[in-house]
Image (cartoon, rainbow, N blue to C red; front, side, top):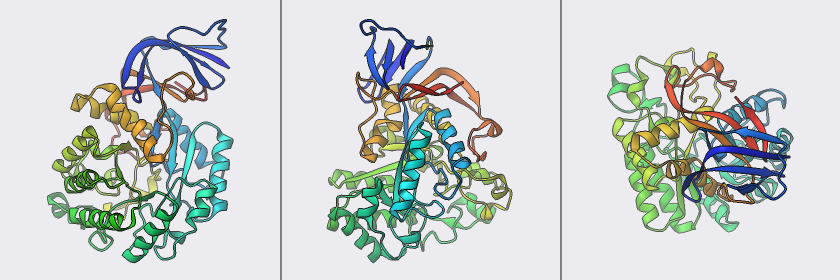
Length: 424
């Protein structure tokens, strides 16, 4: 299959470049840039005049409800959502039903990913059996089955000795551990940022110190074990400062932030809007500003969607009883572009936060538009604005805090190995 993409603006975050040129794809890879290969005969042509082409996005947190969901139901729907958002590579957290704590379950996720053939799916294995926080899983066996890292997802790990042993085990086999930093006791029962908004609404709060105590504990254990750790969904200015200091110390620490945390704060709870009930909770505007700056200066390595498809029934309850989470993979590109516009960041540098940065965290080659690279591509209209209609989302979960808002950048097409898997 040969495809010519003509008249596009090519943005390659890995190379830091942005320029106008034609792109030629053959046998699932980029065959040429600018000038067609000799004796070129295209099977398909995409007119990309006025459009931008970039490598497919990489998302570090997309829940596909694997492997408990039927193959022809939710996994397909969430893969539809990925390609509709220009995302071609994702990490699947271990909080599936059942959790990813056995090699056979990991193999099932990988097999289903290969069958759908549209998105590269990287399973993240459970750190403890059943995510119960007690007995360690056989991490080496899970890694051999295809797990790229090990995590508790949003399940608490109360016993710090278990965490210490987990980091020692992981270090023995040079396996990365992904942790969402929140002290289980300081944050126990909390549903919103511990601030004026939560006090006014009578909601139980999660203080910032719940995050900073956890980060400090993880960093201290990293020093004595040498473990490689990725912090998932940082939420506070103080947390950012601790990560910055740890990186300056030379520790092998990376971190990400959810895209919604770059644009919203606890004020957006309004009068108990369950669409903004997320984990970790949206914090104060000063925290939002610190997170934005941290992505810009590289303290935070990636922006992710933290895509969690939640049904309507789970949100149509009192705020404190609502299931946390939002569908975000289809909004990831637009929210990254809006952050870039607000911060006046050049497009290649901004898009690195949703391509090269998360790819490095995953331990895969950064996606690029270089000749010979896999033709996993996102074609989008940089000038187009679109209104977020929850009912129009491809995901089975239609809950999003951005419902009704207009966002920049509309995905026009997504290519996987040179084949169009989504076209608008």
